[in-house]
Length: 379
Image (tube, rainbow, N blue to C red; front, side):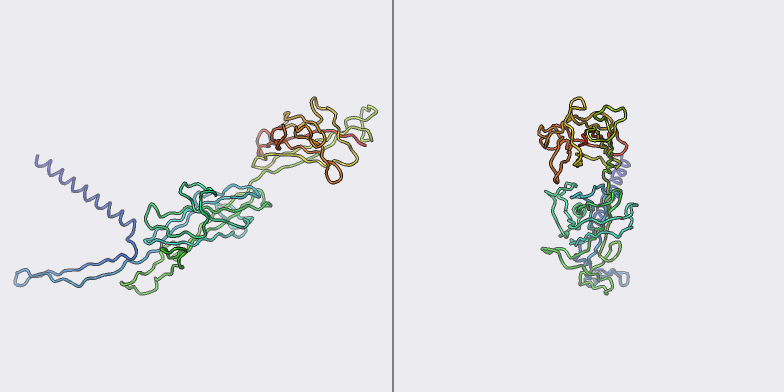
């Protein structure tokens, strides 16, 4: 029974030792705060003629814990953000972590990278438009222009693990003429400033070359570049629909009923407009505008079994409509006055029209193309 008790006691002792070591490691991971006073006194023990004498104490040795400026700035997903030309609120995401032992401010700056600079294996080919805005996440790890805060610097970032990170969103506008398939690469830079003030504190300066002074809190840069400045890069992958539009004409009949009709006055000609999406992104809300030559008149005859024009998508019927003046019946098709002449407009899904919105799949999809047919008479 005594053996069991001894083993239990010993096991308990090992557990307490392990727990104390773990606590010590956790305390070390946090880092002793800058400015903490460390002091202790040593003692010498001795004997005279075999008789122990009173210990002799040293003076009190004191020093202040210096400031370790240590932080990392990282891009979050190692992949380019997919965007389209003329997109606003194009977002890249970064995380800033204070690994030092003092509360710290960080000034932030965004820069376009030079053409050809590679990020995530993608060579830069364009620049983002100004203005570029940096948002501080509200804690939900998701960008929201309504709830996140616009900033130019991070103020008083804690040094305590668990509250020492700031999630940053770099939000920009993609140029309208950005090249489909191109890449826009950017760099976010954070510069250490002294924390603990109402606004952005002064730039933190390094004391590494100064002699150690135990009475002062001195600064040591411990970031990866040892200069108090860290950068991270991310990019935008520009992807868009790529529409190819072709138009053809076919003489259907002349007033003589010829077997091989020709384009003479009075002949009926069918126009066929084809729109194909060859891009990696779907095209939505596709519409067609076709200025009409002054030498022809748009036919309003029901030539397609329910309308004077027809629209197909992916080779299948999509809609029939009537080419009436200014789309008076609201079906999505009409002939409108324009520039001293007229034009045919097909606007599926537009407000107030009955025709559903016309969307074309990305390349490889089943509905990548649409065909619009209508007829005219040669004057």
